[in-house]
Length: 148
Length: 338
Ligand code: SF4
Ligand code: SF4
Image (cartoon, rainbow over all chains, first blue to last red; front, side, top):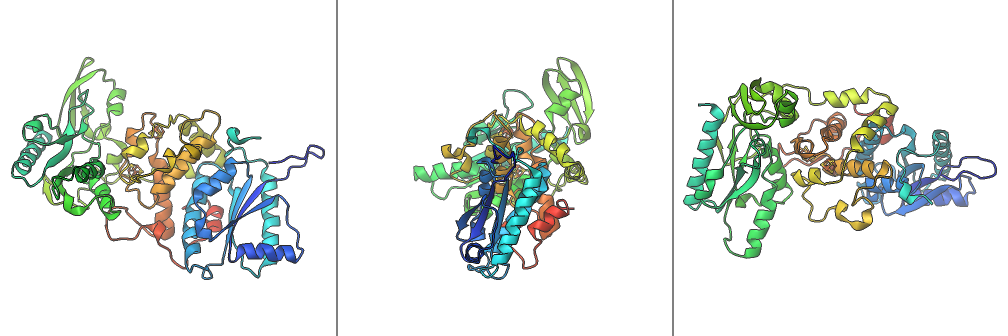
C-alpha cells in the first residue's frame, strides 16, 4: 500500500503466513544467509499452514495488504503429518472463489518452503512482490474503515 | 381433487395419529402465513392445532433446522425426556436433516422424519412477474396453477413459476426418512445447476467484479441466509462477534460484503446441500446459490463428485485430502474449476 512520497514508487505490502516448522525456518535461513527479499514482506508465524483460516487472508487484505502468501512444509513433510494437505484444499477453493469474485489472480499464492530452502524463500518473495507490484494497490478488497 | 390437497390431508391425518398415539410430542409443519403464498414453519402440539396445517406449492421453508432449538428447549425443561419430534421433509429437505444428524446437531432418536412427495415449489416473484397483483388464493395441480387475484384469475404452467432450485431438482428420493407419504410425484430434475456459474466463469475479471459488486452491494446484512441454512448451525457464529468488523452493514466499500459472503460460503463449502433456502429467503434477491454452487462445482472438479447430505457417513471434502490434490497455484492458473 505505501507509496513513497518522494519517488512515487509503489511498494506493495505483502503478508506472508509461514508455518513454524519449515517456512519460518526457511525465512530465517534466508535472513542468516543474507539473501535479500523485500522489506515490505510481513511475516506472520503460524504453528502450521493448516492454522491459516481463509478469514486471515481476507483480514490481511482488509488491513491494507496488497498480496497475501501462505508458506508451509512441502506436502508429505508436515510437522503434524497432514495439516498442509487440508490447507491445500482450503486454499485451492479460496483462490478459485476470489478469482470468481473478480479479484486479480496474482494477489494470493501458496508456496511450499522447507527449512533448508532459504534461497527458495527469497526468490519466492521477490517474485511475488514483483507480481503484486505490477497489479498495484489492492482496491477490490479494501476496507476504508481500516485506512490510516 | 388436485393431488397436492390430497397430500395435505394425508399429512394432517398422519400427524394427528402420531400426536394422539403418543409416538411424537410435537409436529413440525407449515401453517398459513399472512398471505396465501407464505406458509410459515409451525409447531403443532395437538390434533386440534392441526386445523391450521398447510402443505401446498409454497411450503418451501425447510423445517429440520428448528429441531435444534426444539430439542434443546425440550432438554432444558427436563421433561418429556426422549420424546420424539415429527418433522415433514420434502425430498430436498432430507439432505439438510441428514447433515444435521451427521454433524450431531440433532439426535436421530429424537426425530421422526416423514417424507412427503413434492410437486415442485412455487416462486411468488415469477407469479408477480406474470402480471398477477394481490394474489388471494390459488388452486394447483402437478402441472398447472390457477391464481385468484385482484388482477383477475390466471392459469399458469407450473414449470414456468417454479423456484430456481426446483428446476434443478435432486429427484424424488429421500436421503433419510422413517416413512414416506405420497411418494413418486414427478419432479422437474434435469436442468444444469451449474449453468449460471459457468456463465460467470466465462466473463472477464472486471465483468465478474462488477457483477458481484452489483449483487452484493444490495446485501443488508439481515443474516436471513445464515439463519435459514441447515448447515449454518454453529452455536457461536463468527458474524455475531462484535470484534469481527463484519457484524453490521458498512456502506463504505466492498470489503465488508465480500468478506461476509466469501466467509459464509466458505463455511458451508463441502457441506452445502444446495437446498436453495439462502437464495429463496434473501429479501434482496441476491443469487447466493451462485456462490455456493461455485464451491460445489470446484469440489466436484478437484476432489470428485460429492453431494453433501446424501450419505451421513461420507467425509466432507474439506475434512479430507489426498496426496495428489491439485495445487492452489494450478487452480488459479487454469482459471477455476473447469
Ligand atoms: S448455503 Fe444455502 S443452499 Fe447451501 S445448505 Fe445453506 S441454505 Fe441450503
Ligand atoms: S439474506 Fe440476503 S440481504 Fe440478508 S444477509 Fe443474506 S445475502 Fe444479505
